[in-house]
Image 1: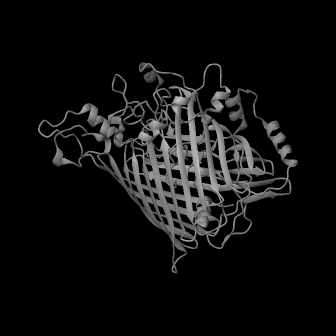
Image 2: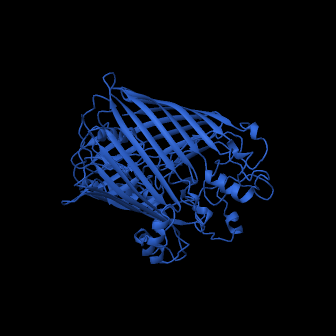
Image 3: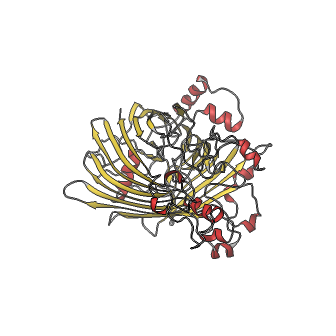
Length: 585
């Protein structure tokens, strides 16, 4: 089995023009002279020994599988993107070790290489469906993605340019009932059920469109285990495999500055530490209607700043355990600009009584762990997240579930004499708050009374793709072959069940004869599918087939006290077919 050492560098150039101009108000063009100057910096550096792996790349799966089989990789997998070695040896099996990137120029001073060229087509026959797809929108019809780029890296500086070009046919479909409209009844492309309390359009306009995003583009300055720089890449914080509750690649990455670890930092006698601090500038989608916000007499500021911190500790006295905390703050940028308090907001006390009631800040806090058991080839992980502060310690002890969400997951490898191995995956996620709302106010997850756009960037939720008020149960079984894999999966998603309860509580009169309400029209999706991948020479072919039954799609009958025996009239089905080609130069 290929062993991977815990080393470091790689990555990128986040269009310094966009980042520095946008974030720091420097309005000088980033032209060829600046690029040449950066390359001159490289010439004084030393040799390359790694680069960044984009989130959801096959190399991430390879590393996680190697960990389950007792490999030496010590990453927590809770602070991604990852750095890894550019392996010069091609693994005998596709899952025997991370594939090497192609190096065009290899010297003691500077390495220049290519990221794989990736093409993917995603077709939805009836309804939009897609998540963890960064800046892409998987609407009804055909959707295309093209990814690729280059990196240039040395011991001290790394530049990466890996954009994402996408197309969506975005064909029309049956609109749900609870979508925002104007006074004339014209559809506004806001969030289903929660309107403009969240910048999460149910559809990206009425027309086909192309979109270009900088993707994994950044400039990094690094020394030993530490790095700092500017980036546009998405971040994944937490151990979840299917979803992450605070930061994931469900949304495109925001323009941000950062400081953190490139690989685990050794703390003498006590263990390892991984961390990332970031200051980012989330952007609104072009479908967010600020005039609607004004009508609610709340802040109409649009420029947001997000301060975030993710820290993972791996104790030396408990093997393969990784425990961590994550915290983000969303704030509006004041007219006078940002101050040190904005950049250091994540270091505030976690109890509201210690800092005062500040309704202008939207805070989300998470605690998580991942525990590997290589002997049994098993990993357990969990994440517990709060959307709001506890007032004091007594409040936390009495009601720790206030505005909470959680993830619980398990992966296990089963050896086989017929194939390489089997892998079972289970993950349960819930963003449905408990019954506390019957007694005290409780916020919708990812929304905020003052930061109206919520925990979003460019119209997508930065955390779990299932969205606020929802829950998911996911199961997958995969058979891994020497050159690929094949598997099946099943998932049940309860779509914003919090809305179902709130609507019943606030809008529906009980049955006069039973005192009951509408308990049979929950909005639930059942996904059943097959997935596979196969490596042939320099190509990796992948495909996923997903059949979806959308029970009570659109919530058209919610609140209708009649027709109990006529359920199913508004159920919909969707078939999604994905086909991808990845070319390794």
